[in-house]
Every structure is written in structure tokens, then in C-alpha cells.
Length: 324
Ligand SMILES: [Zn+2]
Image 1 (cartoon, rainbow, N blue to C red):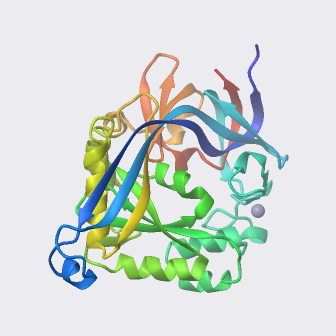
Image 2 (tube, rainbow, N blue to C red):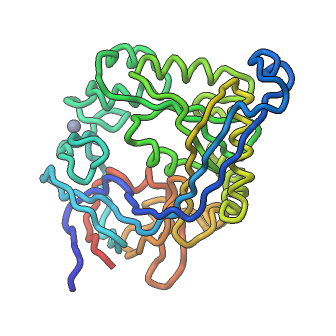
Image 3 (cartoon, protein in one colour):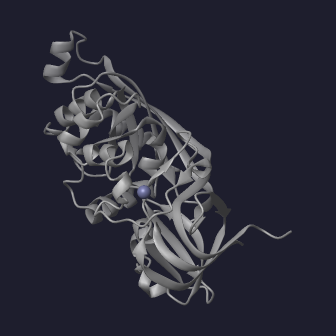
């Protein structure tokens, strides 16, 4: 049977994946010292419990758009031939049912702002929400009346602090999967202003960091160490997260998740040679794995490379994307 194929002038809009649950673990953290005294629970009472589910990616695809058409196609197990890279990007705007980006209509104009939008969409709710999540409070106020739900999450990247972040609620799993992580839990859901205020408040705490204060490369290295052991040590990851959430002053039960690669170890994503998109011009590669926002690609000679998904997305490409 012939698989789907998208060719000509095109753009890759997103990396998508299917997944399966591979293991789970639960852990509690008990109140200690002052926290125990303040909560009145006394030593030994659980204050935070975490139910961690570990998912493994089972299939990887790309959302691809032909230039000039607002419709997109999902191409699974994609083989991509980069005939020519063009010097422009397409506007990142798309709209449709939340959670189903492959059914969305994508903007067909070229990006003209630094944040990757055309002039028409540079003040859209989507563009403003992204600015808000990056810490521009005026952008948060501008979309305060939006009915969209946002989730504040706490992410363990394997360091001594938690990363506190904000995302559209439907995007939580995708947002976690696109950054280095051992595990992460949604801890609060609200409208944009409430969520942003809590994110700021938590991010100021000693045990937390708001946004990406710790460099991405460091978070990648630390998280790959622990995430590579998740299959056998999920309980340890759940305990770590429970203890860190407890230190943050939280109590209650939290569902946490982790997304591990299809067949490689997270450590492979730090050791395989990284390339930029320019290195792929004129070549044909297959996408074989994905973790922490990084794609592993294999060329026709069987060599493996990594490339960050931000290099791949929204760039105007002349080429062919087809199912393996
Ligand atoms: Zn646009």
C-alpha cells in the first residue's frame, strides 16, 4: 500500500506522536519539621502523593503543510527529502479544536515578526499567550478575558530545583514531552491571570525556578541521566517529585507523567551528534525517535544525528515527506 506523501514547497508544523503506558509508580512525601507543625499533621503524615505514569512513544509523525493550502496532513514514520531550504518561515498561527492540531487551519502567510507570526496574527490570543508564558505580563492582561484554561506545572529536570511553567491545559503532555524532564505534574488549572500569578509566586521560591533559568543544555544532561532509568526506577522518580512538591509548600494528590523515547535511551539524545537544518539540505533522512524536543534522524547510510525540533518547524522547504 502506498503511504501518504506531501511534496513541493512545504513546511513541517509540528512533531506528533502516539504513545503507550509502560509503567507507573506512586509515592508520598511526609511533612517534615516546620511544615508538619504548620499543617497540624505531625511528623509521618503524608502531605503530597504523586501517581506517576510513564508513557513511551510508539509512533512518530509530522504535521506537514503544502504552501498555499491552509490544510495539513499527518505523515507517520516520515522519510523527508530536503531538496532546498528557503530563506523564510511561515507564520505559526493555526486555529481549530483545541487538542487536535492536525485538524486545524494553518496560516499561509510568511512570518514577519521575531516571534514567528505574520502581522495579522502577531496580536492573536495564541501569540499573546506565548508572550505571557515567557513572562510578559502586559500580554497576560491583554488576553485576560479569554475562556481558555491554563495549567501551571512543576517539572523535575533532575536538578536540585523544580522548573515551574505554564501551558494551555490541553497541551500539557506535549509541552512536557518537548522539554528535558524526568517527570512533571500539572499542579493548578485556571484562567490565564490566575495561572500566571501562581506560576510567578511558586517560581520565586527557593526550591523552584520560573521558566528556564537553568540552561537548557544543563537540564538536558541532568534529566537524561535519571530518565534513562525510568523503566526500572519509576518509584524513585515519583518520590523525588513528591518530595520537591512538598518542599514547595504544596499538599494533596498529583498526577504526574513522563514521556520516554520510542527505542533509544534519553542519554542517546545527549551523545548523538547534533546538526542544524542546513546540514540536511540535499539529503534524505528518516525520523526515528523523539525526546525532550529533540528528533533523532537516520540518513540513507544508517548514520544517526539529532536535530532540535525548533530547527525543523515552520521553515519553508522544497522537498518530499512520505511515509516509510
Ligand atoms: Zn498568520
